[in-house]
Image (cartoon, rainbow, N blue to C red; front, side):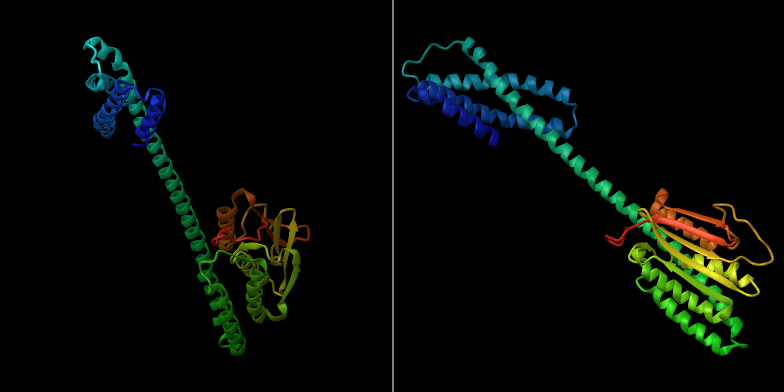
Amino acid sequence: MMGWGFYIGINVLCSLPWWRRIDYDAFRGGFLVSGFVSSFVMYALCHLLWKHNVRIVNACLVCTSAAFPLGAFCAGSAIAVATYFSRVPPPFHWTDIIASTPSGWFVLVAWVAFYFGIKHYLALEEKHRQLVATEILAKEAQLLAKDAQLLALRYQLQPHFLFNTMNAISALVLDQPYVAQQMIGKLGSLLRSTLDAPDLHYVPLSDELAVTEEYLAIETIRFGERLAVRWDIDPGVAETLVPRLILQPLVENAMRHGIAQRRNGGFILIKTQRTGEHLAITIENEPPEEFAAILFDGVARAGGVGLQNVRQRLDHIYGAASSMHTTTNARGNYEVSFTLPLSRSLVGGRL
């Protein structure tokens, strides 16, 4: 409708110099009215071809052919109206209709081109919207799958840690009930910290260190003077976001396979520092006296459930942007270290 309105407006403006020529105005008016009526026939044909997904080349051939007789109809109608309103009616000649047919044919072919052009444009826009919606859904599905994987890995730690701690408490219930009672109290406090906001995958490093300190408080009750905890914390990275419960399994692994195996106990060192645009964390502990095993880089020590869990989580979250190594350092102590990108912003629960 807008196209026809524009076309009629152009014709009216171009006809102003001959506005007193009744026959000329009648010819123009008859041509426009008949062309407008013919466009409904073309619309029905184009709509039928589009609905049946006819190839655009074939559709254009059909519409171009159909436009010719309709163009002749427009030319005949215009000449008939002009003859009716003429003061001196000219003699009728079929050649006049044939000569005027291309004008009507061209107008209808142009209308067909606009129709299919708009239809294809709208179809492309719809496909684009569907593609964007599909990509958004795919990304959301990937994020949900990633969240589920991370949540499963994190939940794997809690029964593992709880089982080990309860075993330690059960061994103290009869011999040292007061110590066992203290451990139960500390365990309750630690569980509250780890179970709060279960869907939160990332926390500031300061919060993660606080949970680790609560865990080590339980172990300090158990080992007493046999355990020495050393901290080397860079305050400049305290607000860096890290995966939740990323330190506790490493510290627990160091306790079980290092300090607990030593007759006189030993120390455990937790060190954090900034290296360029990465956060570096190191867990160091003294090994058992009875053997001096050497851990080659990238090989997990015995009982490596915690180590494997941490590796998988880092890989899921950061990919190649993070790294993790287990080795024996120059002092002969076990050392687990990993790096991850610095991040202090959290959007929608994700880094």
